[in-house]
Length: 289
Image: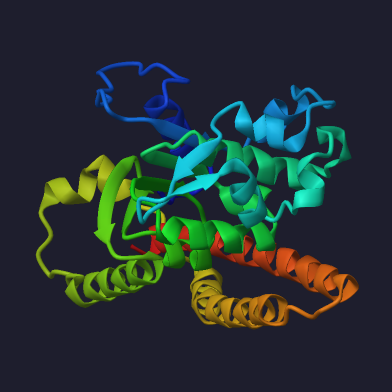
């Protein structure tokens, strides 16, 4: 699910999960559906934790075993290892964890509940790059349905098969990942330009006096058009830079902690910049189309 801020992405997720009730109509959830929801407001749930509880006990409250994609089972301890909690940390009390580690632990608890529909609302805002890499790997073998709300092009390209875009009050479905969606939008914009009618010599009188004629739709200014073109060039450059940093971070196991931390901070800054650029691009793309 993609769309500008305030278009209703999180509201739709809350309707699906029953946190909100619709103003009209009905939401029909199948009887076999088990939803796991990791949202932007996990911080409130983290604050309600029993800080003296051990890490592994917090996970075992949900399940001690979970089935993997190949049908085998993995223990809670093994899942903790997979999500970057070594054995020595699994028996530590929760108050020993950092905020980022608690969010990662909450994500793992959601996964341990064995959902067949997993909803991730802006996961790249709450999870560090190491956790995202583990999550992307986990989702490759996930047997259920994953619904992601995100502006992170790289994450969407790695994890989704369809894009649902909230565009001017409507939801449109696009097959393919986010890069395919962007190319489709460019093609649509070019086609609209090519099909734009030329001014007619004979204009009906009612068209001259209609309210619609006196209130033309908002179009891109020359400055915005240049900004739009610059963003289309800039975003791939930023993502290429991000991919290079990630390759450095994940490709050298011997890297010391200080270097890894520095790369992680650079990645976070770059990710934030990409998100802002994508948000602005989507605003301009709606006007352009």
